[in-house]
Length: 134
Image (cartoon, rainbow, N blue to C red; front, side, top):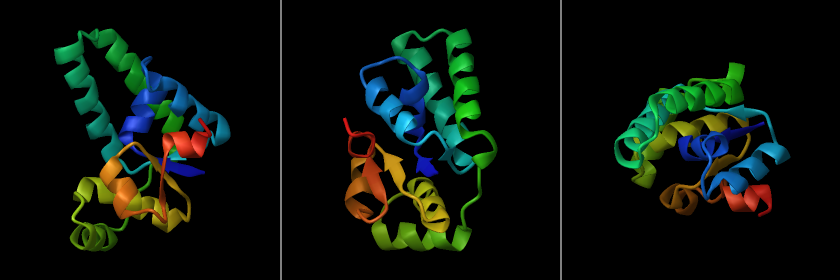
């Protein structure tokens, strides 16, 4: 099992230049977990793609369904005290720290494409390319 951030999840279901690294992550470990926050972040990414990239609403909804299937029953709430501690200590957003705290609690890596998270949490965060071997 791994924790994936919203960008990795998006790239795994929506065709684009970052799809192959995300799919390599899925091949290496198909058991993905995320905090419930992923849904709001994912809808925001889809809304932006609809506004700026012309993504059709039906495609956006299909991508959301595929992402939900990828997470399945592994949607977990991180510890609020730990999220706040991580955000205070690192300077990262509480949103990002939800993913970090969940990975930490599960004892698994966080696969992310967020450069700041990769820099601030090198012991737990790993890039798609590094994890997927591509």
